[in-house]
Length: 112
Image (cartoon, rainbow, N blue to C red; front, side, top):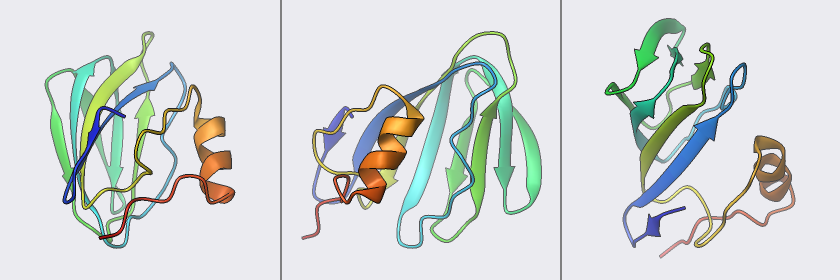
């Protein structure tokens, strides 16, 4: 997590080779992802697109999406959520840790 404000949040993610964010939908949050390094695929509402460093992807609230690393190096990106999607100040080393925190209710975004 880099920053959380009242209306938006910036998060950095690293997806290892062969890894993925996981198929998800954010019902009330728009998301803009910017890819910094690596290569992969973006699934957006049933359509798959190649992604690489320098690409940007907008995911409107309610859109089903997933991002996969199909390359040999880490897929690194930063994403802007509006409104915030995660708790202030959280950081997770793995997707498993993040999923467990969310399931346990320890990753609730601030609500104003």
